[in-house]
Image (cartoon, rainbow, N blue to C red; front, side, top):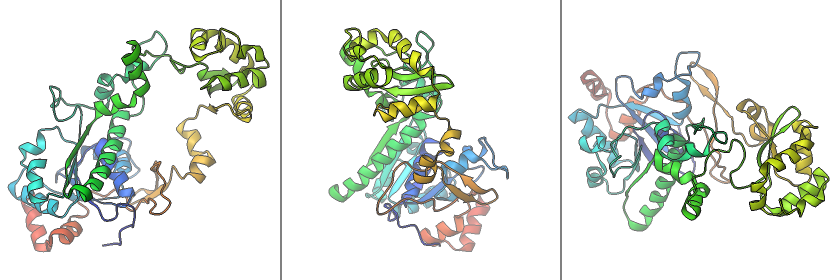
Length: 402
């Protein structure tokens, strides 16, 4: 076995039983921080995301490749009694069990937290579900679109007066993956304090609800449900996207001092800074169309690049609207922040991925393994962790257990 990358989690073994996006994403980041992540898949077909588009040149799923790097893959039939016993043996030597089945699946298999802690009281059992493990919605199926629909966020997206819209990115899945990592890291620390592991859980819908701190507070205080305002902010102005001669730019005037600076140094109208219509955030919101006309009467005479340059020169937060194509070709994100590194994927060659946005001064992160073929590490992992020899593995394969 190759020497493991000595990252922040290099002493942690994770049994990753997850599928599709939320859980696999979490396992990938744990692996990038050095954890020994073992992906456990069903013998026939494996994780269903292996069949999700887009596809690499060799026919493998690029979706699966992206969220299953840094792992080793083993196969195991958890519906068989022998498979369950093998899993229990693996749990004895693991630190974390990560799963995103419906809440009752592991319990019905006899492999829920209450059973697993009996054989390893140090285990951290991490669960991601659609709605959480308790309550009337617990057993409902959920994908990201369902979580966005029920999490409240769609009401705040879309043009003013228009229909609610879905966020393009799978924010429920990815945010739930991030949240379960936070829970795992906290539980690992707590284990050294309380002396044993625990169960932690998060859900797609609750992860989306928690994203909306300002929007939720508006309802708590004023009873107002924030509705879509296009690319403009519902409670600040000018704070959003505006037109220039060749496209759109984003500006963030977060306080009165910035507004006064914009009026005097950029727009050439210092009197707007003290105009009763515009002299507070509250007043500017009430006159947002007038402010849009004032701002765009200036910016439409310049390119996006020129507008952003002038605004930044005056310490006014501004930015161009960038696509992934722009980001990949931007030296800041690509060369200096290394957000789009290449990994070597067998059968595909150099394969670009999106990196973790967390940087460590000492332990660092690393893409230590390509995404594995289904069951590629059966011999290695079962031999290393449970001492299974070639004959034992052949017998298990013959029975369809691995």
